[in-house]
Length: 331
Image (cartoon, rainbow, N blue to C red; front, side):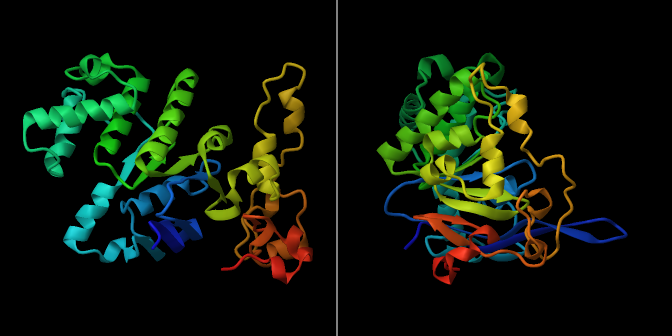
């Protein structure tokens, strides 16, 4: 049985008092996280691609318009009270803002004590203290330098590591990390990512890593889903997609990453970008069609299926239709 499965998930937000227009923030998204071996799966894309909507859906904060979210084979919206309690314990979240998570009037100890009390993790204060100290040490913090402090007395990197420690405290099976390093100083981002890999390897915990930054995704991920306006453009093994992207959108994303070389002008790299083109959205075709340098008539007529373009690499693009029906991805 899989650990976590998303089947044909769609979330539509209504907008407009008069026009009643609707926008699909997430469109027919499917994903599978196996339970036997821990993995780090990345959801990547620009702002507005549906990443955070997906995070809120899999955490149960939003209900889907259509589709299913299964944890250990059970639809999370059809769980009993006890099953829901287990789900809340075993699927934890780390959010983007390490500042807004805390109540400034309480010491950081409250973050841990609340979790320990709610899930009955300890039978005494001494045991609670020991559990808390262990979690802090796992994320590279010294308990005597952290406990008893107010949030404003700690750095952003310390606050984010405390949030990781709080999630780890419950020994979850899956951690959903929504842009966890985007507000952290660049010098500390690598440390946070190392912690994720350590937790995955040492404690058999999987991650759903949500980011707009492909460079951090490449550092830690096993596989990746590249989203554009709610739809998957390309998915598969992280090495194959970053080193040899096949979908025009993925190529655009990777080509727009600045290279740390003074001899390469970043402005020149951006000339190939289609970001300045009109971004009209087709109701029936590929959502990237208006920005795609390879657009064909049928791209705006019908949504392309997924095609297998390499081993464990799939792209939703008609450029690969000539490969043959035998290479189409299974749905």
